[in-house]
Length: 231
Image 1 (spheres, rainbow, N blue to C red):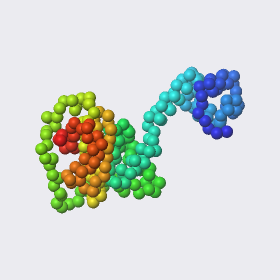
Image 2 (tube, one colour; image 1 turned 30 degrees about the horizontal axis):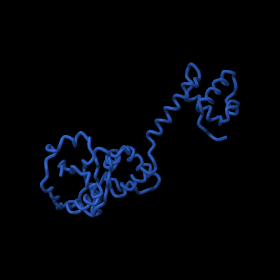
Image 3 (tube, helix red, strand yellow; image 1 turned 135 degrees about the vertical axis):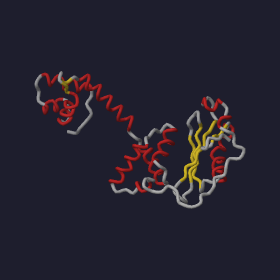
Image 4 (cartoon, rainbow, N blue to C red; image 1 turned 60 degrees about the vertical axis):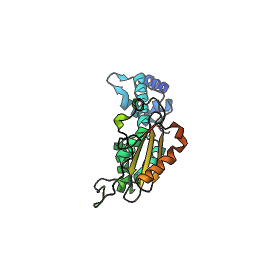
């Protein structure tokens, strides 16, 4: 007989049969479950006062809710793997996904990569730990935003998140020579856009921004860049 989740009714049956002095093996047969299920149930919930089916069921419900809360959907895991493969850090992945309501901690991602490594996968090689994040030598100077306005001058309604159309733009640099990803987040709805670009240059980022926001051109009030400057 297979292992299975006990219902509240079966827990009351177990309690009654225990009081009658029935053996664990016979209890399992009568409530139609594996005897290991009964042993596990009693081990988890039998206190000094005996087995209480009401408390046992309440504990079980709380455990299931906690398990659902921390279970990561397979689709989200697949997305995490894609971002790791293009050298996003667990912290970057966590920040972006959490900002759009797909909560995931960077600690969980690190544990996932460790498990993945033990299974023989090479995903861990994309982590930046123990590696120099930037090559030595001259770096391309990132052009400043023309006619940029200080974030201190941004309308107060932007911070209140009361209207649709205030956007935040950020860029995430990939592995050397692999380009970057431009991300745009609408502050009120948490609607999220992303596009890969060949470089982090102003021209490439501007082009990607225009392409992503073109369908929403009538709903763009402000765009705050990753350096804290609204444009």
